[in-house]
Image (cartoon, rainbow, N blue to C red):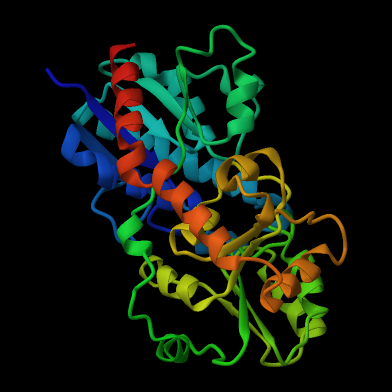
Length: 373
């Protein structure tokens, strides 16, 4: 009998960020190659998986709970626990050999209780946060998207047979820059200025990790007549702070804050000139991969993982040094270096390493190893 695989993400259906997008696209790419089933937390974002009953982290009931008792982590715990109970019932109806999830609390739940389920499924934890090996080592198998964490895990001699370094996969055709792109019409349709350089951030609207406060401060030093800032991402508890910083630091009309549907993201990328990510650490940034595939210049902090993804020193900016980002942006827009060469180099790396045709087989091998485990 062929093995069966449960791909699970509690946020999928409620939001569409890195975890959710990666999980959905993984299922879409693998489902024709075996018995893959998708389990999601909601239906606000379109997918064709089974919906797990759960209390989502953004449920309206939390508006009636004191903030100190309804922290993000506590709400996430409740979401995962309620989804896990629902998934247990689903796996009794249709047992699975392997459970794959980027939700660490779900992975921990099924590591503890999976022995009671039919087929005693092995757990693949997809470590996107990423968590250190001291946490990940407990799971049967670990999917690493972070080169740094993969390298560190190999210090454990037991890791080599159960840890897999596989980057996010991307649909190159959906990102490919159209040869007949009409920039005027595109920007007009997105309500963006025609005659300015667009600096784009595709990241959750927050300051704690994505450091949009740093980006706003650096952008504020650029000539307002030449540049426009676009912050595109999922809303968070810090979004009001981000909005307030924009109004305090930037001229009215010189910034756009938005949340875009997944099918509109390529157009937003094409309409931009530079895509910036100010976080000082990432597992694997989907936004940077998508920008590379869309033939847009990226600027990132040179932590070990971003260097592995981009592998182009011309795209590195020290995001801890005030003024470095705005100087780099001015350098690019003045034409002081060969922008086309950097874009082409990044696109070639994207196609060779991150497009689905380049990574699909590695994902399938990982699932087969886990099923045989």
